[in-house]
Image (cartoon, rainbow, N blue to C red; front, side, top):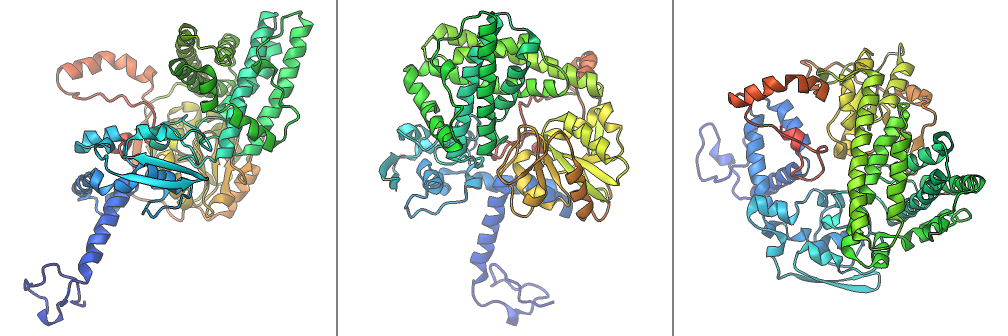
Length: 577
């Protein structure tokens, strides 16, 4: 081998090295330092990937190397080394402002720590740096921000968008030019218009029930409410035309409700929101309407920040409740009493009256609704697929053609498993679909062979490496990369412009695509496994044993994790455990 290896501190003579071939300068030193910085930076943002690489290449050293990388990564979290991540730098990136600032891609900004998380790990926060002033020209307006405080981000009076429905929002306040998730201002406006339509129709639903409408007569409005609200959740629907379809379909639902109220001699709602007519508007006009009912505009209309905060709490909580209720419906469960309460809650949110007591009571009621919906969904899953049980899930590849299923909808997965029986195609789960393996009614299919990949935020890398088609049944979907865009499919409420959308759970095209793809060339040995399925039905009967183990010191920690791993550096809960 050549002895022209770079040697740091090359005055030291090393045994076996021809000293005449020693580098006579330090040209390699900055390259080595830059390489180390790049590796540590990548580890900051893509820890799960570096963990997998290190574990596979250096299984005996992976724990020590990860500890070293984590320690060095925390050093990079010091404010002095991250000054480019200020509020203004992020805004300059997303709004194409003219500023000479070195900035990273938006994908990486989502992983940067908040002021509070930064302070907890380093002792410093962005608010400790108060000597930076930037002036940026943006859309003809001058924005001056002093310091790094996230509070200063609210200074923009008329943002192009204002979306704060997920915890990854820019500066943990709101995305104002383009979403961290990739959502555009146009899509955000369309979703605002759709949410306002849900409130409008909810007022009519309340009137219809007051007039004596039956559960059968309310079915159309119930199912439209669940699907439409679900489509506005984070990383579900980025397709403006699909959202427009929901809005226009809602106008027909509202007309049917108005006819029903009239037939039964009921009283039509007099609220201004109830009588908004969007039936003749184009997609562009619906988008313009969405800007008029944006979060900032509704807040100004109410004129009371505390009351409007309760409106926002109720809105986002109802979105979650509707998503789970939609899953219940897919399983054949629709509770009319729950739907009645959902529509009553939305009707309350349609009012601009700053009713503190009423809005607080409404928010608490939504909490009750959520509990009822989750209980119903738990029963629906168990009754349909059997009670979940602890199950080992293979997380390494099996040779053969393959299809990947992401999201939450177990009914879609079951339909796919039935349609792929006997076709020599293996089915893998991804992300939130992992628990499917614990249900007896699903794991009975031998070609449900395992789980591929990690959490949702890594899909752009993981989907690109999957040698077959991908189906996204619910959230979370990210804007697909070109290298897999022709083999990713959406279904149900999911939508991305240009991505093929499946109807009626017909997976024929997906199966044909899988048969044309190369699939996994070999089975990985030794196989790796994770254990899932610790449902309350399996855990609660062991409560006495668990308590005894805690008292004896056998169990020292119990972790309660809400949600899944996220794209931010400090959200690798499951990965680290």
